[in-house]
Image 1 (tube, rainbow, N blue to C red):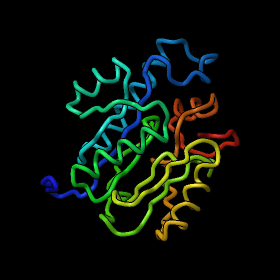
Image 2: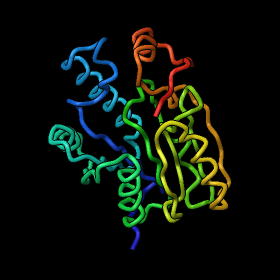
Image 3: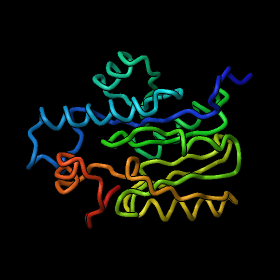
Image 4: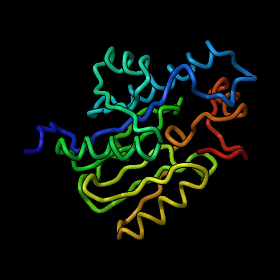
Length: 205
């Protein structure tokens, strides 16, 4: 029996490997303590943006589990890869009766809301937000009952679009600066410090 979803038929999956070991590519710019705080701050921002929805955090890191518990968020074990984390989060929400799943990366410093990417219910529509370099996929919304195979990593935006089409899904590309800007390289960090979400040339996952 599906759960009582209230006004929402969508849930949000938030894969979050670790606070203490995240963003290693920024080590030359930020020490370990500052990097951990950056990762926490971005995760707080994304969790706040997702707050109207049921959120499931996928992690096995003790500090992330404690953070999720403190925020009242459900947490399930990380199977060891981003693709696997997205899949187990999707399966969890599907099994609890949600019609739509939004998979969001936790490193979106400008995230404000997921309402506009989560509104399609069980309709055969994939909503894909490419990163600010049109390479990665920081936000992806799909019907929960579709056997979507996640394929994160460089070039994932194109792969996810092609897979959606192969499954017979209509797909809508949403270029939203608040959701497309993720932080991976020093140039991204500089833009966060300036409060600017704009493109650059480095790859993103």
